Image (tube, rainbow over all chains, first blue to last red):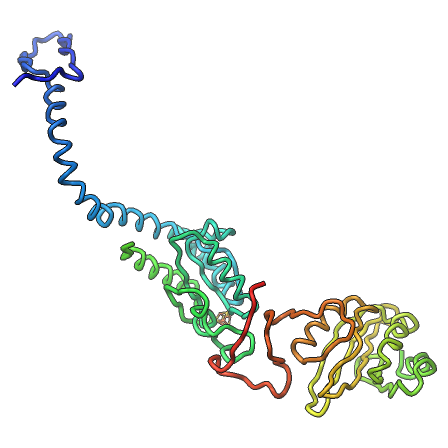
Length: 203
Length: 158
Ligand code: SF4
């Protein structure tokens, strides 16, 4: 078998000037780098064929998706808005005492920079369209947390004339937090619940 | 300012359309007038009596009729005055006060959507607190608390 012209031939290394005689190793007949090149030439197409389908099927599920989920759940940016009294607890959760930022949760003022909408208060029919608009402006992937009894099911105003009985009538909700209002700990617990959901996320 | 002072200024101009000026706790008085006299009354209350600030407009459902009331404030007298008029329940309309006191605009929108009082010649009678297309008049006594499933709210995207 004639060896094809090597792409790149390494120069024999200069003997090191160490002052001692190192035992000489024979240079192989074909330089090392050339062997690697040959191997690669045969190996890569075969590997591509074998791995191609594997990567397509498994790489997404085993590598890319977990990395995405890991990054996503550790940098949840909620929309910085407040609808009613629950917003006070929402705000307190970002203060020094509860410090939601240690979970990577930073409220952002623009829906374009957000991936989770925390509906923290009473949703009235008047604000319903604005809520939907804000939700639609958020880039995928996105999640919704219904914080408090009002957002979950209308709360104390369930029978009122102007209140949406639960924000799940308007947008899909991933996590519900009970309480009127829920304490900041409960809100953080809801965020950790959402992180569990994101960890399981497949597509 | 006493109810007598109010009636001394208003009575000659309005005549029988001024029904009564009664004492009212904490205010200069309560002026009851025929609803057709609204446009004669309001400028006089503002200019002759000096009540230059309209503090609120509201409506009350008394079942057999409805009442529209206006609370006005005078800086000079440092007093409130209550103006009120009765409107029939089947035709609850009254002239707008927003030409005299511009601040009446939003109050009348609110009174219109919650109590169902129609304000003639209002520049912009749209929903203020309830969504566009909302059909109920929730502060009327005939409006009952609903289970949410029973209340079909229609809204428009605006
Ligand atoms: S659940 Fe309670 S605290 Fe939260 S917005 Fe509703 S009424 Fe206010």
